[in-house]
Image (cartoon, rainbow, N blue to C red; front, side, top):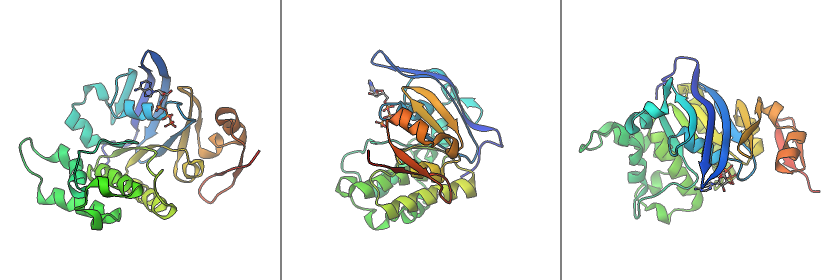
Amino acid sequence: MSTAASGGNTVEVRGVTVALDGRTVLSGVDLDARAGEWLTVIGPNGAGKSTLLRAVGGALSFTGSVTIFGTSTADLARRARARLVATVPQQPTVPPGMVVEDYVLLGRTPYIPALGRESAADRAVVHRVLERLDLTRFASRPLARLSGGERQRAFLARALAQEAPLLLLDEPTTALDIGHQQEVLDLVDELRRDQGLTVLATTHDLSVAGEYADRLVLLAEGRVAAAGAPAEVLTEELLSRHYGARVRVLPGEHGPLVVPVRW
Ligand SMILES: Nc1ncnc2c1ncn2[C@@H]1O[C@H](COP(=O)(O)OP(=O)(O)OP(=O)(O)O)[C@@H](O)[C@H]1O
């Protein structure tokens, strides 16, 4: 994996507005992510988090601009974009009957010539990623016959096999047990530190957001309501105002921990 950006911003989102079914769901969103940074988007259900990631990943049309590694996504062909940005959507489409190894190999598509076959190097990448995500023993099993957490790890495996320097993660650990959750988050963090991967994630786990992200963006009703270091965004006042939640924010080793408190 290479760091395509030599400093500066990996992602620049400017004035992004999205209308779906005639309703504005994102409104004038600005956001920057620097190379090697982990930026997490939080916000209540329906705030527009997935929509924002889909706009950055080129999966829907919008007004405004999204620039990745200095190039507007509007000017990037599909294959070139797939070498720069890998996405783990909430509910990826899985070809029926496909086994885990072949599914993860789909991540190598941007490197395989048209009408060509994967190389030994592509297979090696797939095997390495399967190993890292504790999936080797499931390699020849259809995805439909995995547990929810095993399948979610396969979704991440496909994105990591893409070896793109920008990773978009839409609630990537919702189905994972606490051990696999930490394993996956630590792996992504290791790639960020060692290979300069830039991470743009969404989550409802605010403690995870506080522990892993360098910066947070709080979306509410399609607009940026707050942005900054985790301690600036994860405040009892902001979380009460935008989530209607009663929480305590406690100091943690790597960032604030958010604990729900019963009314
Ligand atoms: N295809 C669609 N057509 C119409 N409206 C949509 C469509 N997809 C999403 N929306 C609406 O857009 C808004 C933002 O949705 P989005 O999925 O981005 O929210 P989110 O912040 O990711 O929510 P959640 O936390 O529940 O996953 C919601 O009000 C949703 O109902």
